[in-house]
Length: 314
Ligand code: ADP
Ligand code: MG
Image (cartoon, rainbow, N blue to C red; front, side):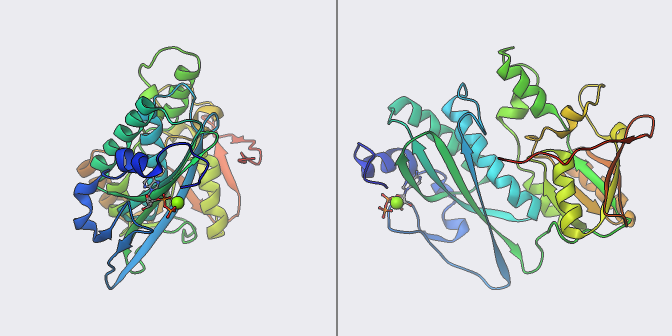
């Protein structure tokens, strides 16, 4: 912990962070967890470790009005979603939190969000850091795959089918509900409590050629698959699954849904539909990869939609 946070650092960590998900330490081979200089984990053969990290900043990645339970939970899920996209089994996570002040009730509710996350995905919190400053949460998630089983962005081929899981745009509608203070009704849960599609990612590791989780927007994220795989894509607005009938570009491309977008060989279609049934997750065909390097979106009249270059974080 940095020296500038005015409290008993040891006590704070002990009170709010030391027992999160501790029920899952043994099954994930954690020998030493929160409390020592570093965590210690035993490793196995024929396994590759998968590691990813995401920072969530107040006012940028989450609303100031959110409860600290929701802030904790959402920050962790959106980090874990990268492991889902790789087809990895989650094993451990750590968090670095920067706090403007130490407030008991806020931290208490924050640790409830962590516990909820740990319980749902059955992984322990194994370490972190605590500093003082503008509220931000960095979550590092770690997982495993059998050697060479990670699903990458760079391995899609031309003439493959492109799918998305779930419904696109609900988080956008939810964020609108929350920002416009329309109460927390139908869609806000999609924004506040996204899911990391771990089980789907695990099933996809045998059949998908490439996969990404949709954090920034369907078009940008699919475009990342295209660029790193050196292919193009043709997708159809009409086919993109949404909750409302007006499929605006904003709706389908605003991100935050953390659904998976992935490519699959045509002959795997039936297998994929079985996975969808087994997991009870809608999986929808939205287009095909192509030889050209362009990402092309067709509107409901099959006219090409003009796309600009997409979002950037800065
Ligand atoms: P050091 O000064 O050696 O970096 P810290 O006081 O930062 O030690 O951390 C002590 C222990 O508490 C370490 O095991 C660290 O991983 C853990 N820790 C610190 N902050 C957090 C946190 N926010 N969540 C989980 N574990 C934490
Ligand atoms: Mg430290």
